[in-house]
Image (cartoon, rainbow, N blue to C red; front, side, top):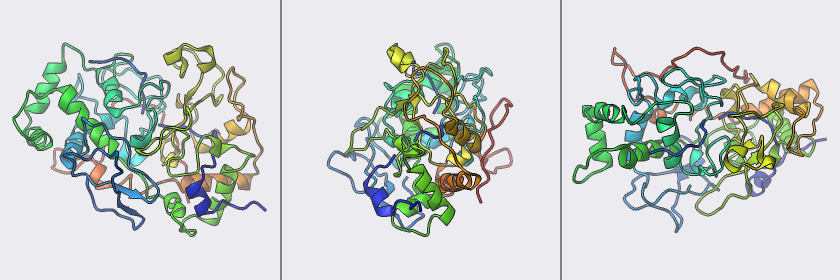
Length: 417
């Protein structure tokens, strides 16, 4: 009989697969809330000695055992900065054509992914990679699918804003001043900017004001209120019997899922905090495709090393049932397709991770594994008004999200019972 790991064991030891992938897009390029906790297991986190708390009034609501994330000394978390960043995140005016917001590719109801294999930029160009989900990015050891060098949100956010391979927001030298002027002339932003950056009013700019505020908002997107989180905190009833059987499969040497998606709050093998450095590289070749041609070469794009061809960042599985389609290229439409791809040991390709050996599941076991993956959904996170679109529509009603500007074949969210 297979027995699921107990919450205590899971909370103190990282059992660790290679399974599913969805999630923050972008190839690296050089470029110029507080809120009331909604669950008893979430409490204001206490700062460690290394915490950056100067000028900060932001309260982190974190479960026991989750340390504060690393925060840049020059961009402390503040509620005013978070609120400014939230408005910017949902504002399509922050693009060359006024039609693309960050939220165009990161929808709250989809775990801040977008449901498309490939997102589109302001000029309609498709991105070669799947848009990554954004929950708990503050703890990620790296942020892009293929480049381990991008480790800070303040740097990553510049890529979709100012990058040109492909154009996403499309901010270039000839239009940056116009877009910035549109933003800072809005009375709403004038109030938000002064609140976030009090004192003598400077010349508002992207590097010192817009980018840091966006980073503050994304850094504050925390997701720790799923049934899985409650189970980790000792509530053995939080997971159904089927989900507990699925957890046992997930953590087994038979499937190897938890070797790369550690069975803890982060569900990936590369995460950091103020107390802990990354323990693993977090990049693997899961053999989901047979070849890795430009621009989807993985870690190879940054290192040029043949052994890094096809190695992509291991995403977190948090909210995975909401973030279809999957893999770095959005090629697998649903979770059953993902499970069956791993069961078949992926495709024959160089640098395939040695843990990708294949396995056999009965129909019941597949259903149990899906039940566990569904337990990773944080319903509070995807409906929390603190993270929602603050801009009213023409009728004065708040809009749930900024629509994706181009149609595409959507992913298929799993039906979780």
